[in-house]
Structures are given as C-alpha cells and as structure tokens.
Image 1 (cartoon, rainbow, N blue to C red):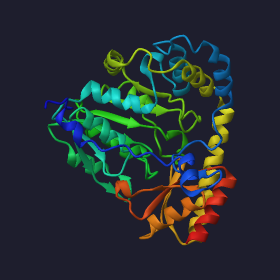
Image 2: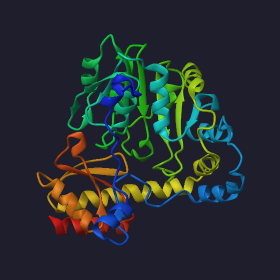
Image 3: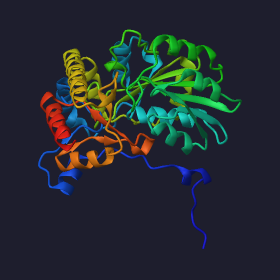
Length: 362
C-alpha cells in the first residue's frame, strides 16, 4: 500500500527535548508547588508594563494583528539602536532561525554549529536537508580556530550562541572579530544573542552594529528571558537590508499575535523591570557560585541567567532526587555533559531552596 512519506532527511531529525514542567513534576512525584529552575525563564514573571498592555489589548483579539508588526519593530529599533528597516519580528527567536534556514539552506549544504550548543540550530538545519558539522569546544567555550578548520566549499551558514547555551560562556570581542574576518563573504553568520542582556564581562561585544553593515551577518534576539515573555514568543532578527528582504519574502503574514505585539512594545520600554531582572540574576549567580564552592563542586562561570555545575558520575541520580524534592533542574546528558546539571537563576528564596536540597542530596 502506498503511503505519504516525508523528505528522506526528515526521519533523521531528533526531537527537541524541553525542560520538565511544574505540572508534570507535581503529578509524577506528588510535590506541591515545585520550583522550576530548568528553562532559563525570568523568575520575576512578565514585565508589568507588558501585562497592562495585554489587558488593554485583549478586547481586540478577534482582529488580525498587524502583519508588519510596525510598532513592535519600531520599539525594537529604539532598544537595539538601529533602523526599523533592519528589524524583523517573529514568533520567538526560534522562528527567526527557521526563516534563516528556509531562506538560505538547500539539501547538500553544510552548516557549522559548536559541539555543545542550543539544539534547535541542528533541527532547523536538518529540516532543510543540510548536513550539520559540529565544531569543537575548548574549555566549554566556542573555539574560533575549530570553526575555521570546519569550513569547506559546502559551508553555507554558521550558527553561534553568544553567550552560549548551555555552557554560559561567551566569545570575547577579539575572538568575535577574528571570526568575522576569516569567514568567507558567501557564508552566513548567525549570532544568537538571546542571553546578551545578561553578559557582564567588559570584553563581551554584541554584534548588532556590525550586522547593520555586514552582508553576511544576522543577529537573533528574544524577549523570553530578559523581559519575561517566554510564553508569548517575541523574537527579532537584525541584519542589513538584503538579508531583511530575503527573510521578509517568506515570513508568514501574521506570525506575531496581537497580544504579543502589544506586550513586546511595552516590555521594551520597561527599563526598571530589566534592571531588576539583571540585578536578581547577577546576585543569584554569585549566590550559587558561593554555594557550589562550599560544596566542593566545579562550575562554569556564566554570562547568562543559568549556570552549569559539575555533579560527577551520579549527576542523573542527583537530578532525580532533586525532582523528588520539588526542584526542577536540567540534566545535560542529551548533549554529552553526563556529569552536569544546568540551573536557572530563580528568586532568592528559590535559589536557597535549591541549595538546601542539593546539599541534602549530596
């Protein structure tokens, strides 16, 4: 019997594995009000201004949203310091990644991604039939020289998270500029800056300004973490005019819903909320570092709102024991870090609850 079959490369695509939800853990372990420190969400919740904007706009939900997301792009251009014509708005940063792959990749192309990074780069590339080449990491950092060694005549794009998820490390300014110099002009560089707002090292450099003039560079951004809009899905791509033209040709007409557009505009103006987010994140990281040192655990200093901590050979057991105590972290075995868990920064009391539970389990 004949059956409908997908393109041959579709069957090789791995499923994206999301963090465990609070509801799931509550059901499985009988825990009341679990603490979720697994998905790098904003512990403060959404921007208050965004919540008010949603309330004001909800009665217009029967109308189609602005297909160009004009107000949202204007707000983003003010926030990132560019022209609205250099911004494309999307249903989260994942859609920007999808649009890039659909616009530029064909079967047989090669895409370079670091060996330990956000898994969706690989998934989106494989959907378009591209071959994924993994560049090596060096001390849990992106290795620029390793990327150079992976370049070939078939390389079409390079996906980099800066700062990187899940390691929390970053490309410093010199390394980033070095990479931009040696990558051929016909290879697209995608710099995902989902966590750039959290970077506090002085030699971290956003690539937004460079993306406005470089014809083969696009930066990707999201309001999920820094502004607390993970559930609404608001993302942006910033690039020069030619790249914008290519992406806009294939962007769905109503890809950002009306409530997300209004919430995004309001959140981008909520400077006090962003400042509070950064303060609670940096203080939380320092608290976790001190706790890990007290417990004799190695960790990777982070420029994000999460941290990787090395538990050792019993990491999976510790992860499960934490779940039984209502603490949800992320066990990193699916990307080859079998001895690590990743912990998102929570509210101060959530961080303390995690530390108490971890000490008890250990």
